Length: 331
Image 1: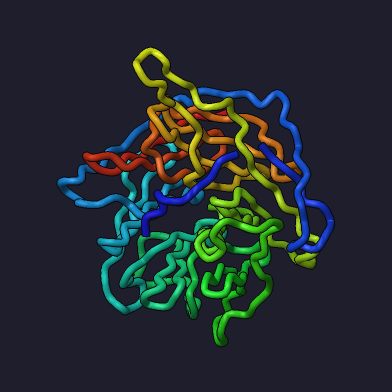
Image 2 (image 1 turned 120 degrees about the horizontal axis):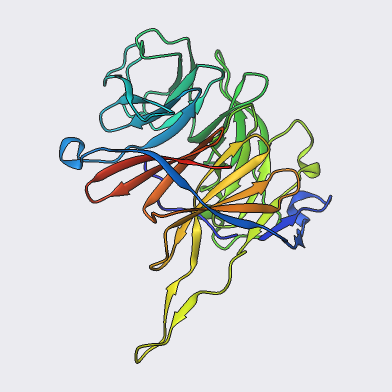
């Protein structure tokens, strides 16, 4: 399931300790957020003539980069440091380790990854290319569209039919543990709430983010009324205007966010350019304060997914010729 189509714009705010539905976040002014140019380390190109479609999901997992191909029902593994191919596994079917329409990769702890197949109704956990011997499975019931592994090892999901956060259980239907309520009204509640999803993450940090309303919060054991919200507004200057022709036109402006990933205590947010800007920007926010601490400039505005590792930013792009996977050095 492609996820090119949502995302947001970005300065930041902290939620007050009022009930979630009444909360009005206060603006936090940013100071000293730098912009760094990311340095390309390696790139792998996938020819559309061979594949005919783009990859659906990206996940950095240990020393490998995993790519999910929903159309072919396969998982591709690449070396994180070189981009070299490690293995390709998977096939279409209903047996162990087989997929009907796999739609999401999930971090499943050290050296493990999960594949969610909502058409088949299960989340399967694997440790390597032997997909016919999954380490475990969990049933998926209801309208689920995003998943996260908690620090306790259990898995939670967003049930977009009623906008509840549920915990998956092996022998019973999912248990409701929380609801998704944003601190201010949204423009189109049905559309915008259903775009809420978990940022790609490790280490048991489950961050729910909402592209259109520009909010995120962390799912914790505390009561919903104590939830701390962070709100994004636009930290960049107004659009650059070209006045050289007979009519002024905007030639660059920040766009809505496309993707988000968590690494350590930081949230990385991928944004593109609405016009003919210089490329994509990855904004980095401190999860504790909600402040933007820096931005990474990537020279491609066709990026649609990101993930993060120590010293590296991994970017998945969609071009006319096919998918492109690149790794960039970051400080």
